[in-house]
Image (cartoon, rainbow, N blue to C red; front, side):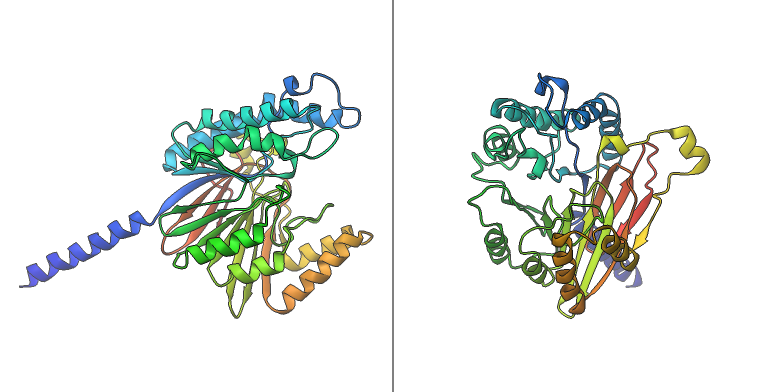
Length: 360
């Protein structure tokens, strides 16, 4: 009798483990990568050629190293997909056709590193930035068809889309297509998927402040979005700032965690011998309160920042913020999602050892 009970108990444990595995997955995450090369800039930019040359050099050396390290780590950890959180390209092209080609080539470059994995990208400000104006048209013609194919769709009308990974909803928001109401899209997506474990919001601009340097830009309607997400175990995956950071806001209604990523090759320092001898920590770590002090001091004369920080004070009164902000150092991350936790591992070299492991 005891043997039968023991066997049944082992069977239940095994079944639970199998169920847990079915709801567990890993995703590789990149922030801004600013893909470019000289062919997209046949003539010098009248004002920004120094920055353009810097990023061209970055893509000759550092960025391929970063992607190779990510591919190696992703293969080792058996990741299930790739997220790229906007500013896929450096932009700034003189013509629509060059910008379109840059976007298409950048997406195919990512697929070259990860040919067997689905790749999801969202629109960033550099993706729509041409030399003389901003335009969504190169994104529509160059990027949307490739992203639609990754999603198993014929077309994408804009950069708003959703996909499910197990019991979790991923929502990509497009704030650069002029006719699209992204807040309405988010509301509708949440209504259409009422029973989820987690909701992951993918947006290029942060929901909560995540950089102390100018410009300090957040997504439109950030207060309303925070209120929607806190009821649904919401987690924001974002970029734009070129620093790693984590912020969590907790209220009586729930909590929203935000993780900001950067993958700029100029801040990738893959000096393995130095790291072996001295370690590879993320330096200049700020907590939330000291971050706000730095933000206020650095943006004292910026009217936009003053309004934003006042709004933030209103958000803080109704909830509690905690967070960490790290100085510039670039890399990639692996998001691991289980029934028990959502965890992010940050990598800044190819050692296979994360510099930080953060719970969201």
